[in-house]
Length: 154
Ligand code: 4NP
Image (cartoon, rainbow, N blue to C red; front, side, top):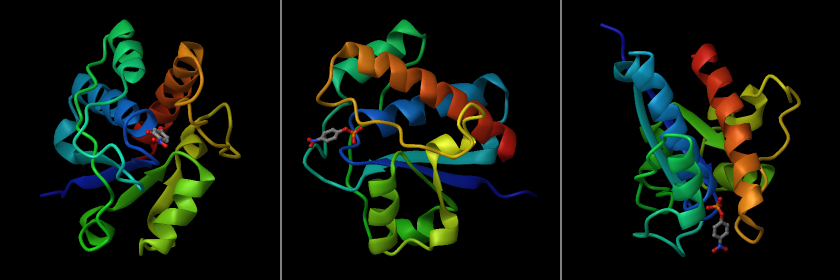
């Protein structure tokens, strides 16, 4: 029996980028018939939006592309999460360093765009929260390419 890879997508608020990344990744592994190989979740390093649905702009850009963004925001739990996942996918460099501060083994952390074949140097997925809807379209495209690379690497 092979065990599942436990993947946690992480951003700051868990309402814009990481819930969208989680939804895209889940859709991809479902369509490929490999969902049983993964346990997937997302969270924020901050807890301001805990208990809330994703930002309406993330839900909308997902819907436009046939993806349901269903997750409810939660804050990273430093007493449980560091050992509960195999792979921590940080949306940006700040999330990455915050995860180390919160006790995650650095070798388990990857930046999302390190899986994007267009950007192997792994720049940030920019935070679209304070921008317009266009920012969410750009983030969607980055996350789609990165999820493709992630699926192929696991
Ligand atoms: P996210 O975007 O990290 O992609 O979910 C943000 C959402 C909310 C806030 C910051 C970033 N905020 O400061 O409330």
